[in-house]
Image: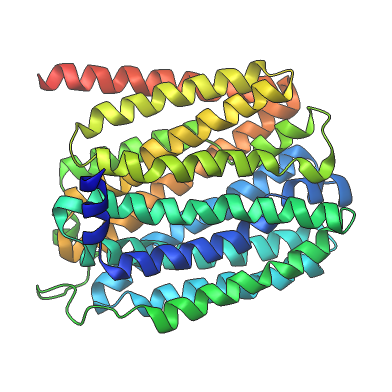
Length: 395
C-alpha cells in the first residue's frame, strides 16, 4: 500500500493535469455518446447498419488523424498547442448534437468531435511519455487512463439522471454536455506547462524514410497487436444497442456504459502499475481471455444480469490492455519519434475499428446480435493462438 502511494507521488503534475482534462472532456462526450445510438434509433429512426457505419467512421477518423498530429508534434517539438486545438474542436462540436434533427447532422457533429480527438490524442500521449521517468511510465499511462475513464462513467451517469429528470429529453442533456467540455479546454490552457525541451535531439521530418526505418520490429509488432485487439473490440455503441434488447427503461440504458467505464476506471491504474513489473505479452494474453468471456456473456445474454456481467468483463479487458499498449508504444519508439509512433499505431487501429464496426453492424442486421459478439470472440481466439505461437518460436 505504501509503495502504491509512493508511486502515485512520483507521477509528475503534468500527468495529473492531462488526466483531469481527459476526465472533463470524457464527461462531456459520454453524456452524448451514451445516448446517441438510442437517439438515432428511436428519435431519428436510423438503422443499426448506419449507426455502426457512423460510429466506425467517426472513431476511425479520430485514430487515423493521430498519425498526422503526432508527426507534426515531433517535427515542431511542441505538443500543447495541438492538444488545445483538438480539445477545442471537441468542445465546439457539442452544441451541434443538440441542434441535430437528421442522421446527417449527427454524423457531421460526430466527425468534428472525433477529428478533435484525433488531433489531440498522439500529442497528449507523447506529453505523458515526455514528462514521466521510464520506470513508472506504465503507472503514469494507467493513471491518465483511469482519470479519463472516471469521466467516461460519470458522463453516462449524469445522462441517466437528466433523462429521468427531463422525461427523456435528449437535446436538453446534449446542451448540458457543453459545460464540462469548455472546462476541459480551460484547464489545459491554464494548468499545463509544457517542458521547454521535451526532445533533445535535432528534429527532422518524421515521415522521411530513414526516420521511419528507426521504428523497430518490436514497435511494429505492438502496432499489429493493436490492430487485432481493435478488430476484435468494435464500437461500444453495440453494448448500448444490446441493452436496448433487454426491455429495460430507455432512460436507464446508458447505465451499461456507467458499469463498463466504472470497472475500466478502477482497473486501469492497478493493471498499468502491474505492467511495470511483469511480462507485457502475458498481460495482453490475459486481456484477450477476458474479452472472450465478455463476448460469450453478451452473445448468450437473455437477462440484464448476464448483460452486466459481459459489460463488466469488457471493462476489465479495457483496463488490462489500453494503458499497456500505450506503454509498449512508448517503450519501443525513439523519444524524438514518439508522436509519430503513437500516430502510426492509431492510424492502423482506426482502420481496424472502421472494419470492425461496419462488420458488426452487418452481422447484427443479417444474423442477429449474438453473431456480432461471437465473431469478436473468434478473432480473440485467433489472436491468442498467434501470440502463443510467436512466444514459442522466440523461445
